[in-house]
Image (cartoon, rainbow, N blue to C red; front, side, top):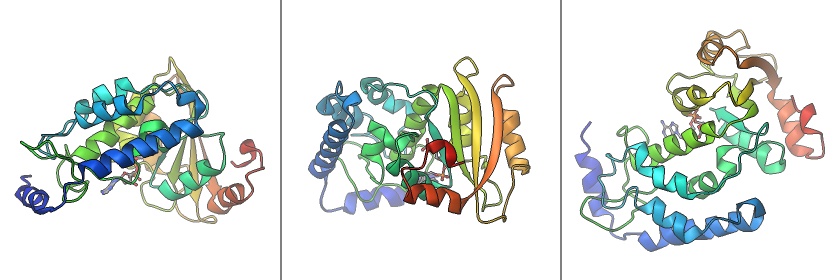
Length: 256
Ligand code: APR
């Protein structure tokens, strides 16, 4: 769809926020490196410059995910076999969980995911400014600045997957494996049996209600993955995960 509306919106945004986005970006980048010594080989200025070239001066509805290739190639990220946690429609609980314990890592716990989580940004044709308001929304156009970033970052995260991977899905909705989600359209397709041993689905349920591991959408998920890749699914009550969040000393293996 054409986005004349979005453009005029961006034009009317009175205070271009190039400086503030750059500052937020660099501050979050440096804070992350401080707290994650394994990322210390990264240079936040270099990462910013690879990041901004993806979208500055471009129509915010015409930024393909490949525009972020230079960013992804600039970031130095160790793979964390057996600890990668994917998710769909469980954003809050999954991050409450990983915030409290180091046994699992989501994309948002890696450098680029951490920096961009919660931010909105875009550029404008024939402008070298960076905007944080008036940007197209998630579904306004396919190739919008923000959505393409998450698609590309998710692709890189899934490409790095190795060993036993876990996915936390939502058992309180009709279709826990949603065919339009990033998890389904990007991540699952990139799990390679040569590197990934198994996929374990943790289906978060509200006390014996909602969908079960027999759900048709989960059967689709099982069909989607390479046959050599082991699959298992376990319905876990939300309260059990909440207990693990409130008692971070519980062994991770006991959470599900
Ligand atoms: N409008 C706005 N934001 C959206 C929309 C939408 N229609 N759809 C998705 N998002 C953004 C939101 O920030 C949302 O919390 O993407 C996030 C994840 O969307 P989900 O549908 O819950 O899950 P999914 O699309 O599968 O993406 C999560 O991708 O980010 C990676 O590794 C991560 O495994 C995870 C998966």
